[in-house]
Image (cartoon, rainbow, N blue to C red; front, side, top):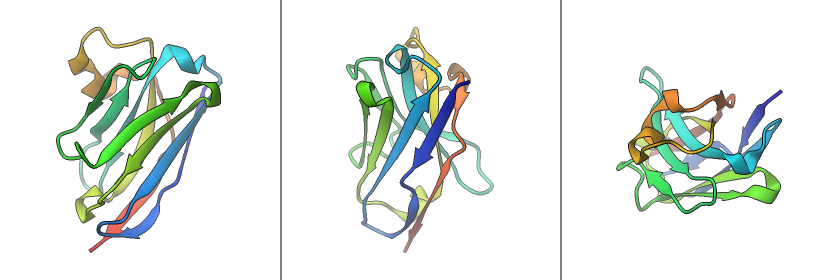
Length: 128
């Protein structure tokens, strides 16, 4: 059974940093592209960042580019999202997702339908 477990969320102030972690089990982690999505209250789930199998490819939403960094540690079956200079508009539930293999096109990293497995999410709240 595949499980993705997110952690690291919390309540912070504008300008603070957080690092989210997602530990995967039940799959061959090194064979999965990984991504972070988020969903704010009343809004659709949106793409945040993704990383390819060997970290060669990383993609980011424009809204987080330069502030967030995605990384992975294959021996630890873990993907991270370092979030710096947090803003109130970053408030959301953050979800980890796994995609067997790599998308055929870079654009597909942004598409939630590309991903096969999802975690339960971790809440990030940024106060102004």
